Length: 114
Length: 468
Image 1 (cartoon, rainbow over the protein chains, first blue to last red):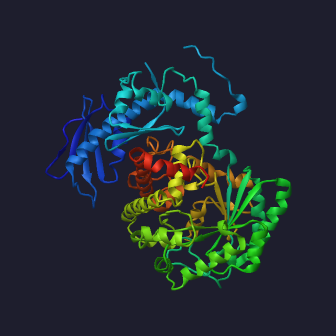
Image 2: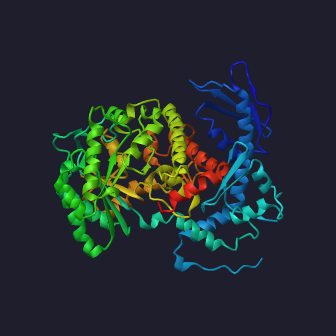
Image 3: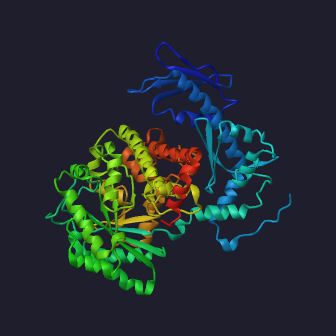
């Protein structure tokens, strides 16, 4: 993520390197800002950069820009971590739910070979 | 080398709260999740052992205790095995109180045409017994259901007759303002072990103000005493509703409950239904409610430390979800949601609704959550198209904003509330007041467990151990 700025019109602007943060992460982060901001996203042609603009909605004012910057910075890192956990554990979670909701009579014990 | 197991996390200040679907939790320093993902935790660290013991990581690709994990997950979701356990019968919309924040839009006690038909009552009892639940709760609501006490008695007698062959455990509950309960009804209740649930908002000035009456408190207290005398002290429970005025009186409300012989309180926020819908600025109300809740809980903890056993029931429900492997029966904190899975409503109008709140919407001519007529087939009502549509949006595990939340197994999904507050049953978490309130309360309870363990844990364990 590049530097986060407020432009002369009061819009918050920043860019995201989509080779680092993909759509899953970007959408999860921006989802939680969508109650307070109108969000515009635009991909740079021939690059991995996506430009994001946040326009405060009526009734919302940016009282603490520093806090917003910290939140964005933390949220991108946290959601990327959540994505990693989800990816690495998807199969075991499916297995867990399948076993939990299967008829217990149909359980087959695993033979573990480490 | 270790492997990750499915878990969620939430940063809170300088800590991170880690949870999983099985009910384990860990509160560890901020940055630990990054270290876990980067495989920077050494087996010699205490954290490594905690992570292993809490099923956050595994030393094998498929954990040796996978079956154990599956059993724990199944246990947490075992409320689904019983399916609908709470069957609410809205016997009439008539009431003899008509409070100013009434969520059910009740009618005057002389109003005609809003009592349940006897034939519908009997058919509804038949539907109740189609549920596979071994323990059924038959709850009579209104309006004021004691205005049709003959119907209540007929319903219970019919259920008793059917139960001779069904052999279920049935709990009968009458939700009443206790203002005008007849001796005849009390005698019947004593015979069939019926319990009462009533409303008490706090001290007389608050209770009377909330109801727009000058003597409601006195009447309710007299009614509670009368029911206790006839049925026993433990046969009456009370619920409070936190109006905007109530927010100023956390201690006074607790004291009113204590003075009237109660040993617990359920700090319940207003629901945006019925007359309460027009009440206030909801985000501001819920922020104020969280402050109110914290003040009241602190006072209750203080009482417990002084040796007085007094429970805050909402906290106890959340604690059961955090500290025990078992599910709870509270429909607002279920995933999949409590509607249909745990609760169903047979309304005085001859229709079946997905929840108590659904029938309240119907009083405003909104029939979104009407499942069909009481005379319809059980399968069409409970497994029909409407139930199937709702099932696509009724679990925190897969709806936006909840699916990555660390509190998804503690909180619950509520399409009816989403619809009534946001106009969309799927819901939108970024400005959801219930999400904000539940997150704040759950985080506060985790904070207490983490920072004041020795002080609060013995009290909390007492609340959830069932020994109180």
